[in-house]
Amino acid sequence: MFSKLKSVFNITHLEHSIIAVGIQLILWPFLGLLSAGVVACAVFLGREVSQHEYKLIQELGGRHKLNWYSGLIHKWAVDSVLDVVMPALACLVVYTAASLLI
Image 1 (cartoon, rainbow, N blue to C red):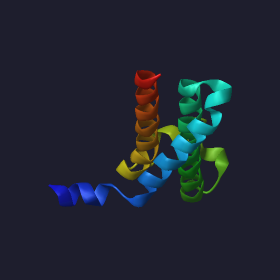
Image 2 (spheres, one colour):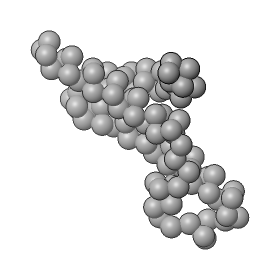
Image 3 (cartoon, rainbow, N blue to C red):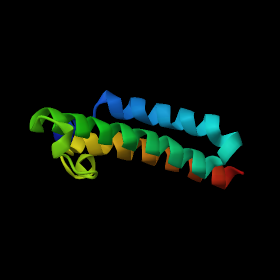
């Protein structure tokens, strides 16, 4: 069971979570903790969507064959989903912990 989990999780999920929390903490004084977490998550969502768009452009041979939503619905593997979900969970943990402590 744990070997399957190990093959799903990789170091980029941890790196993305640390970066997202860093962004959240830097923006906290300006936007508030919740909004800063949303911005941090949006950065990683945008990154993943653009990576999927570039993969589709290479496969299809040009941008003219893509719809505006193609990067959102095509080429999402478990690793790609976790690259967005793990930073979101990390930001949620920071927000929840701060809400309970403040």
